[in-house]
Length: 230
Length: 85
Image 1 (tube, rainbow over the protein chains, first blue to last red):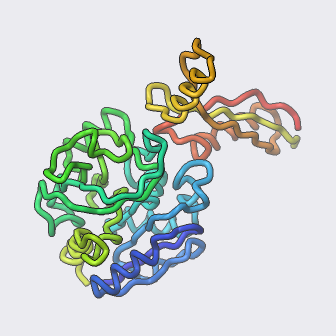
Image 2 (cartoon, each protein chain N blue to C red):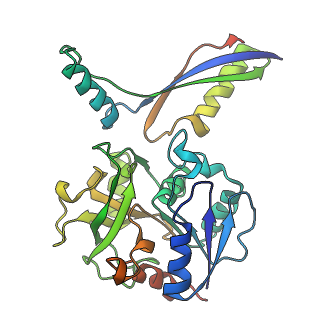
Image 3 (cartoon, rainbow over the protein chains, first blue to last red):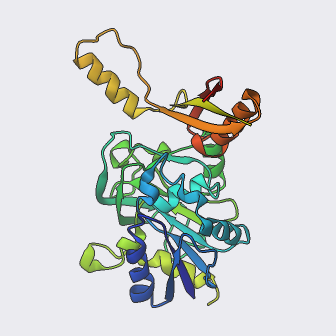
Protein backbone atom coordinates (compact mmCIF):
# COMPACT_ATOMS: atom_id res chain seq x y z
CA UNK A 1 0.00 0.00 0.00
CA UNK A 2 1.18 3.50 -0.85
CA UNK A 3 0.88 6.39 1.56
CA UNK A 4 1.08 9.96 0.26
CA UNK A 5 2.29 12.46 2.85
CA UNK A 6 1.60 16.09 1.97
CA UNK A 7 4.35 18.61 2.67
CA UNK A 8 3.01 22.14 3.10
CA UNK A 9 5.33 25.08 3.82
CA UNK A 10 6.10 24.62 7.55
CA UNK A 11 4.81 21.10 7.86
CA UNK A 12 7.10 19.53 10.44
CA UNK A 13 5.71 16.06 11.08
CA UNK A 14 5.93 14.83 7.51
CA UNK A 15 9.22 13.03 8.23
CA UNK A 16 7.76 11.44 11.37
CA UNK A 17 4.85 10.15 9.33
CA UNK A 18 7.19 8.89 6.60
CA UNK A 19 9.29 7.08 9.20
CA UNK A 20 6.25 5.49 10.82
CA UNK A 21 4.87 4.26 7.49
CA UNK A 22 8.10 2.99 5.97
CA UNK A 23 10.16 1.82 8.96
CA UNK A 24 7.47 0.71 11.41
CA UNK A 25 4.64 -0.35 9.12
CA UNK A 26 6.95 -1.44 6.30
CA UNK A 27 4.85 0.14 3.56
CA UNK A 28 5.67 2.51 0.72
CA UNK A 29 5.40 6.26 1.26
CA UNK A 30 5.96 9.34 -0.90
CA UNK A 31 6.07 13.03 -0.09
CA UNK A 32 3.52 15.08 -1.98
CA UNK A 33 4.53 18.69 -2.55
CA UNK A 34 1.80 21.22 -1.82
CA UNK A 35 2.16 22.89 -5.22
CA UNK A 36 1.70 19.66 -7.15
CA UNK A 37 -1.53 18.26 -8.53
CA UNK A 38 -0.55 14.61 -8.43
CA UNK A 39 -1.18 12.11 -5.63
CA UNK A 40 1.28 9.72 -7.37
CA UNK A 41 -1.11 6.84 -7.04
CA UNK A 42 -1.30 7.03 -3.26
CA UNK A 43 -3.92 4.82 -1.61
CA UNK A 44 -3.92 6.73 1.67
CA UNK A 45 -3.25 10.44 2.23
CA UNK A 46 -1.72 11.79 5.42
CA UNK A 47 -2.05 15.50 6.20
CA UNK A 48 0.77 15.86 8.74
CA UNK A 49 1.31 18.12 11.72
CA UNK A 50 3.09 21.42 11.60
CA UNK A 51 2.36 25.09 11.22
CA UNK A 52 1.44 25.32 7.56
CA UNK A 53 1.70 28.85 6.17
CA UNK A 54 2.78 30.07 9.60
CA UNK A 55 -0.76 29.59 10.94
CA UNK A 56 -1.54 32.90 9.21
CA UNK A 57 -5.15 34.08 9.37
CA UNK A 58 -6.31 30.91 11.14
CA UNK A 59 -4.69 27.52 11.61
CA UNK A 60 -5.12 25.51 8.42
CA UNK A 61 -6.97 28.28 6.60
CA UNK A 62 -4.41 28.93 3.88
CA UNK A 63 -3.20 25.35 3.41
CA UNK A 64 -6.71 24.43 2.42
CA UNK A 65 -6.17 26.37 -0.82
CA UNK A 66 -2.90 24.65 -1.71
CA UNK A 67 -3.05 23.13 -5.22
CA UNK A 68 -2.62 19.58 -3.87
CA UNK A 69 -5.73 19.98 -1.70
CA UNK A 70 -7.94 19.82 -4.81
CA UNK A 71 -6.69 16.29 -5.41
CA UNK A 72 -6.84 15.40 -1.71
CA UNK A 73 -10.45 16.57 -1.56
CA UNK A 74 -11.33 14.60 -4.71
CA UNK A 75 -9.62 11.53 -3.20
CA UNK A 76 -11.65 11.97 0.00
CA UNK A 77 -14.94 12.48 -1.86
CA UNK A 78 -14.27 9.27 -3.78
CA UNK A 79 -13.94 7.38 -0.49
CA UNK A 80 -10.14 7.35 -0.30
CA UNK A 81 -8.68 7.30 3.22
CA UNK A 82 -7.36 10.60 4.59
CA UNK A 83 -5.67 10.88 7.98
CA UNK A 84 -5.31 14.42 9.31
CA UNK A 85 -3.00 14.72 12.29
CA UNK A 86 -2.82 17.91 14.38
CA UNK A 87 -2.34 20.65 11.75
CA UNK A 88 -3.74 18.13 9.28
CA UNK A 89 -6.92 17.91 11.39
CA UNK A 90 -7.15 21.71 11.36
CA UNK A 91 -6.70 21.76 7.58
CA UNK A 92 -9.33 19.04 7.08
CA UNK A 93 -11.84 21.08 9.10
CA UNK A 94 -11.06 24.26 7.18
CA UNK A 95 -11.43 22.34 3.92
CA UNK A 96 -14.86 21.12 4.96
CA UNK A 97 -13.79 17.47 4.97
CA UNK A 98 -14.71 17.33 8.67
CA UNK A 99 -17.24 19.32 10.71
CA UNK A 100 -16.27 21.86 13.36
CA UNK A 101 -13.09 23.84 13.89
CA UNK A 102 -9.99 23.91 16.10
CA UNK A 103 -9.51 26.99 18.29
CA UNK A 104 -6.88 28.34 20.65
CA UNK A 105 -6.38 26.15 23.74
CA UNK A 106 -8.61 27.39 26.55
CA UNK A 107 -5.57 28.06 28.81
CA UNK A 108 -3.76 29.83 25.95
CA UNK A 109 -0.62 27.74 26.41
CA UNK A 110 1.05 25.50 23.89
CA UNK A 111 0.79 21.98 25.24
CA UNK A 112 3.42 19.36 24.48
CA UNK A 113 2.83 16.21 26.51
CA UNK A 114 1.82 12.59 26.46
CA UNK A 115 -1.93 12.36 26.91
CA UNK A 116 -4.37 9.49 27.26
CA UNK A 117 -7.16 9.06 24.76
CA UNK A 118 -9.99 6.58 24.94
CA UNK A 119 -11.11 4.73 21.83
CA UNK A 120 -14.81 5.53 21.42
CA UNK A 121 -15.43 3.61 18.22
CA UNK A 122 -13.29 0.62 17.23
CA UNK A 123 -15.31 -0.22 14.14
CA UNK A 124 -13.71 2.19 11.70
CA UNK A 125 -11.14 2.16 8.95
CA UNK A 126 -8.64 3.67 11.37
CA UNK A 127 -9.38 1.93 14.67
CA UNK A 128 -10.28 -1.70 13.95
CA UNK A 129 -7.10 -2.95 15.64
CA UNK A 130 -8.12 -1.35 18.94
CA UNK A 131 -10.79 -2.27 21.46
CA UNK A 132 -13.60 0.09 22.27
CA UNK A 133 -12.86 1.78 25.59
CA UNK A 134 -9.16 1.07 25.35
CA UNK A 135 -6.92 3.86 26.64
CA UNK A 136 -3.96 4.87 24.47
CA UNK A 137 -0.92 6.92 25.36
CA UNK A 138 -0.23 9.34 22.51
CA UNK A 139 1.59 12.70 22.55
CA UNK A 140 0.03 16.04 21.68
CA UNK A 141 1.87 19.22 20.68
CA UNK A 142 -0.40 22.11 19.79
CA UNK A 143 -1.57 25.60 20.65
CA UNK A 144 -4.88 25.39 18.80
CA UNK A 145 -6.45 22.06 19.66
CA UNK A 146 -9.77 22.98 21.22
CA UNK A 147 -12.39 21.31 19.07
CA UNK A 148 -15.59 23.31 18.76
CA UNK A 149 -18.80 22.85 16.79
CA UNK A 150 -22.42 23.88 17.27
CA UNK A 151 -24.26 21.74 19.85
CA UNK A 152 -26.46 20.13 17.21
CA UNK A 153 -23.37 19.07 15.28
CA UNK A 154 -21.75 17.67 18.43
CA UNK A 155 -24.95 15.75 19.22
CA UNK A 156 -25.11 14.40 15.69
CA UNK A 157 -21.49 13.21 15.45
CA UNK A 158 -21.74 11.63 18.88
CA UNK A 159 -24.98 9.89 17.91
CA UNK A 160 -23.48 8.60 14.67
CA UNK A 161 -20.35 7.23 16.33
CA UNK A 162 -18.14 9.81 14.64
CA UNK A 163 -16.35 10.79 17.83
CA UNK A 164 -13.43 8.37 17.64
CA UNK A 165 -11.12 9.49 20.46
CA UNK A 166 -11.71 11.39 23.70
CA UNK A 167 -9.17 12.72 26.18
CA UNK A 168 -9.33 10.57 29.30
CA UNK A 169 -7.30 9.72 32.37
CA UNK A 170 -5.25 6.51 32.57
CA UNK A 171 -8.33 4.61 33.78
CA UNK A 172 -10.43 5.84 30.89
CA UNK A 173 -12.46 8.38 32.86
CA UNK A 174 -13.48 11.43 30.86
CA UNK A 175 -12.87 14.53 32.93
CA UNK A 176 -11.95 18.19 32.60
CA UNK A 177 -8.60 17.41 34.23
CA UNK A 178 -7.75 14.97 31.44
CA UNK A 179 -8.60 17.53 28.75
CA UNK A 180 -5.40 19.27 27.61
CA UNK A 181 -7.01 22.07 25.61
CA UNK A 182 -10.63 22.64 26.66
CA UNK A 183 -11.98 20.66 23.72
CA UNK A 184 -15.77 20.33 23.62
CA UNK A 185 -16.85 17.04 25.23
CA UNK A 186 -13.16 16.06 25.49
CA UNK A 187 -13.08 15.33 21.77
CA UNK A 188 -9.61 14.41 20.49
CA UNK A 189 -10.51 12.89 17.13
CA UNK A 190 -13.49 12.62 14.78
CA UNK A 191 -14.37 10.90 11.53
CA UNK A 192 -16.53 12.12 8.64
CA UNK A 193 -19.99 10.77 7.74
CA UNK A 194 -18.58 8.38 5.15
CA UNK A 195 -15.94 7.04 7.56
CA UNK A 196 -12.89 7.64 5.38
CA UNK A 197 -11.51 10.91 6.81
CA UNK A 198 -10.12 10.91 10.35
CA UNK A 199 -8.89 14.04 12.08
CA UNK A 200 -7.11 13.90 15.43
CA UNK A 201 -4.98 16.29 17.48
CA UNK A 202 -2.75 13.63 19.12
CA UNK A 203 0.16 12.28 17.06
CA UNK A 204 -0.06 8.50 16.47
CA UNK A 205 2.99 8.70 14.17
CA UNK A 206 5.04 9.84 17.16
CA UNK A 207 3.84 6.90 19.23
CA UNK A 208 5.27 4.09 17.14
CA UNK A 209 8.17 2.90 19.27
CA UNK A 210 8.44 1.86 22.92
CA UNK A 211 11.88 3.41 22.88
CA UNK A 212 10.14 6.77 22.45
CA UNK A 213 7.56 6.13 25.15
CA UNK A 214 4.67 4.43 23.39
CA UNK A 215 3.79 2.29 20.41
CA UNK A 216 0.05 2.75 20.76
CA UNK A 217 -0.07 4.57 17.43
CA UNK A 218 1.11 1.60 15.37
CA UNK A 219 -2.25 -0.14 15.36
CA UNK A 220 -3.91 2.92 13.86
CA UNK A 221 -1.73 2.50 10.78
CA UNK A 222 -2.22 -1.27 10.86
CA UNK A 223 -5.98 -0.72 10.97
CA UNK A 224 -5.82 1.15 7.67
CA UNK A 225 -3.67 -1.59 6.19
CA UNK A 226 -6.12 -4.30 7.18
CA UNK A 227 -9.05 -2.56 5.48
CA UNK A 228 -7.53 -1.14 2.32
CA UNK A 229 -6.34 -3.61 -0.29
CA UNK A 230 -2.68 -3.20 -1.07
CA UNK B 1 -13.38 50.24 -12.71
CA UNK B 2 -12.33 52.11 -9.60
CA UNK B 3 -10.26 51.14 -6.62
CA UNK B 4 -12.04 50.67 -3.29
CA UNK B 5 -10.87 50.08 0.23
CA UNK B 6 -13.00 48.05 2.64
CA UNK B 7 -12.33 47.34 6.29
CA UNK B 8 -13.42 44.01 7.73
CA UNK B 9 -13.95 43.25 11.42
CA UNK B 10 -13.78 39.62 12.46
CA UNK B 11 -14.77 38.67 15.98
CA UNK B 12 -15.14 35.39 17.86
CA UNK B 13 -18.68 34.04 17.56
CA UNK B 14 -20.78 35.27 20.48
CA UNK B 15 -21.24 32.61 23.13
CA UNK B 16 -18.08 30.69 22.23
CA UNK B 17 -15.31 30.63 24.81
CA UNK B 18 -12.84 33.42 23.99
CA UNK B 19 -9.79 32.70 26.15
CA UNK B 20 -7.76 35.47 24.55
CA UNK B 21 -10.47 38.04 25.29
CA UNK B 22 -10.75 36.74 28.85
CA UNK B 23 -7.00 37.02 29.38
CA UNK B 24 -7.01 40.64 28.21
CA UNK B 25 -10.08 41.39 30.36
CA UNK B 26 -8.35 39.97 33.44
CA UNK B 27 -5.19 41.94 32.69
CA UNK B 28 -7.21 45.15 32.40
CA UNK B 29 -8.85 44.45 35.77
CA UNK B 30 -5.44 43.82 37.30
CA UNK B 31 -4.33 47.19 35.92
CA UNK B 32 -7.16 48.83 37.84
CA UNK B 33 -9.88 48.98 35.20
CA UNK B 34 -12.28 47.32 37.62
CA UNK B 35 -15.39 48.25 35.66
CA UNK B 36 -14.42 46.28 32.57
CA UNK B 37 -17.09 43.66 31.87
CA UNK B 38 -16.03 41.88 28.75
CA UNK B 39 -13.31 41.95 26.09
CA UNK B 40 -13.15 40.20 22.77
CA UNK B 41 -10.11 40.02 20.54
CA UNK B 42 -10.62 39.71 16.81
CA UNK B 43 -8.96 40.70 13.55
CA UNK B 44 -9.10 43.84 11.47
CA UNK B 45 -8.44 43.32 7.79
CA UNK B 46 -8.21 45.97 5.08
CA UNK B 47 -8.91 44.86 1.54
CA UNK B 48 -8.25 46.98 -1.52
CA UNK B 49 -10.00 45.81 -4.64
CA UNK B 50 -11.03 47.00 -8.07
CA UNK B 51 -14.77 47.13 -8.68
CA UNK B 52 -17.30 48.98 -10.80
CA UNK B 53 -18.94 50.56 -7.77
CA UNK B 54 -19.05 50.40 -3.99
CA UNK B 55 -21.87 47.87 -3.96
CA UNK B 56 -19.93 45.43 -6.10
CA UNK B 57 -16.85 45.93 -3.92
CA UNK B 58 -18.83 45.20 -0.75
CA UNK B 59 -20.40 42.10 -2.27
CA UNK B 60 -17.01 40.84 -3.31
CA UNK B 61 -15.52 41.34 0.14
CA UNK B 62 -18.53 39.69 1.78
CA UNK B 63 -17.87 36.69 -0.46
CA UNK B 64 -14.20 36.77 0.62
CA UNK B 65 -15.30 36.69 4.26
CA UNK B 66 -17.52 33.67 3.68
CA UNK B 67 -14.86 31.77 1.76
CA UNK B 68 -11.65 32.61 3.60
CA UNK B 69 -11.38 35.62 5.89
CA UNK B 70 -13.78 34.32 8.56
CA UNK B 71 -14.50 30.79 9.74
CA UNK B 72 -18.29 30.34 9.68
CA UNK B 73 -18.12 27.88 12.60
CA UNK B 74 -16.32 30.14 15.04
CA UNK B 75 -16.35 33.74 13.83
CA UNK B 76 -18.66 36.62 12.90
CA UNK B 77 -17.72 39.33 10.47
CA UNK B 78 -18.84 42.84 9.63
CA UNK B 79 -17.67 44.95 6.74
CA UNK B 80 -17.53 48.71 6.65
CA UNK B 81 -18.81 50.75 3.70
CA UNK B 82 -16.44 50.81 0.75
CA UNK B 83 -14.44 54.00 0.27
CA UNK B 84 -12.55 54.93 -2.86
CA UNK B 85 -8.90 54.22 -2.36
